[in-house]
Amino acid sequence: MAADMDSMAKAADETVMEGLGPFQPELHSPYHVFTSAQWAKFRADTPLTLTEDEVKRLRSLDDPIDLDEVRRIYLSLSRLLSAHVESSQMLFKQRDRFLSLSGTSKTPFVIGIAGSVAVGKSTTARILKELLARWPSSPKVDLVTTDGFLYPNAVLSRENLMQRKGFPESYDIGALLRFLSEIKAGRPNVPAPTYSHLTYDVIPDKFRTIDRPDILIFEGINVLQSRDLPEDGKVIPMVSDFFDFSIYIDADERLIHKWYVDRFMKLRQTAFQDPNSYFNRYTRVSAEEALAIAEDLWANINLKNLRQNILPTRPRADLILRKGNNHFIEKVALRKL
Image 1 (tube, rainbow, N blue to C red):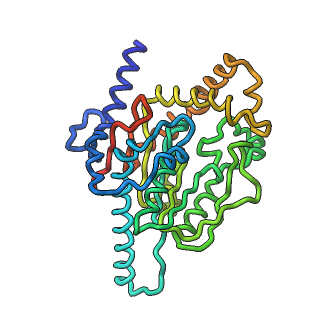
Image 2 (cartoon, rainbow, N blue to C red):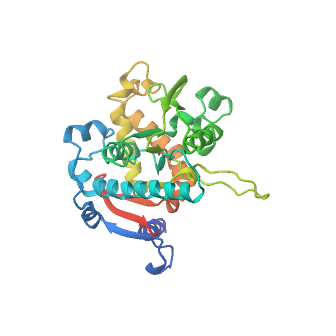
Image 3 (cartoon, rainbow, N blue to C red):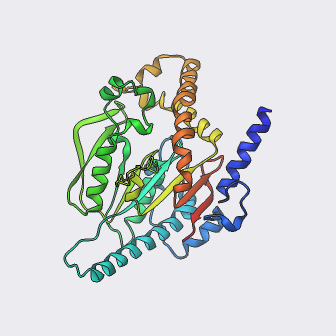
């Protein structure tokens, strides 16, 4: 019975990725779906402006992305996003003329990137940042992650939320919405809080300044999260309301599980070795104990967050990048206009 249920779940997942809901004909799919080979053709004559050394610098631990993957997937994607940016800039000018406005400055084009832990969001965000900054329509591109908008560990501990860090309730949504609202209002020098993966905490009183970029990439596991609608009809914005385009990085649950555990074990030999690391204590246990800890963290925190909060947001994305066994993208689903 369990095996049958697994097969049914996998089939349902594959059906959704093909852009189809359960028992829906392809005609009703909200997505165009392409293989990586089909998608690569949309690159057209887009030049490759990254070097192998730059790709190595931009990719995260255990992410094998290389120049071939950039050619296959990211050049086409940067071309598509650049077209969206140019269209947005043109619409902004047309609306200004329509409203007889003058002297207003265009607002940043905001791209949201969502997906599970260990699925490769950070690599995708950094690669896109570099590629998009080399298009003439968007020379200034900034990248902000939602980690800085987590409540400090002291607050999470007081509220008994440390075991739910990364869940929607662990973020200061008010601060997050104020930040995006100021960005979209075109205000200069908007402060973005910073986060340390070494200390596993928000850095007090340390901010980055985001000053009217052409594009802002906003990356985080729950950026496509929705919320209950108010009964009285009052305006309560969601994070995604500020996005001009959204991307979901997708993979089979079993693959993400493997990538998470493999990364945890490799970090024991690298970043966790720093005496100042929050996770340094995991270097002082046996490999077997560390593996058990990683499995527990996956099963009781990250898997629950994926199933309850992250994966349900996938259908809200404008673009879905589906990864296969080797961490490379196998399918691309683009929402129809």
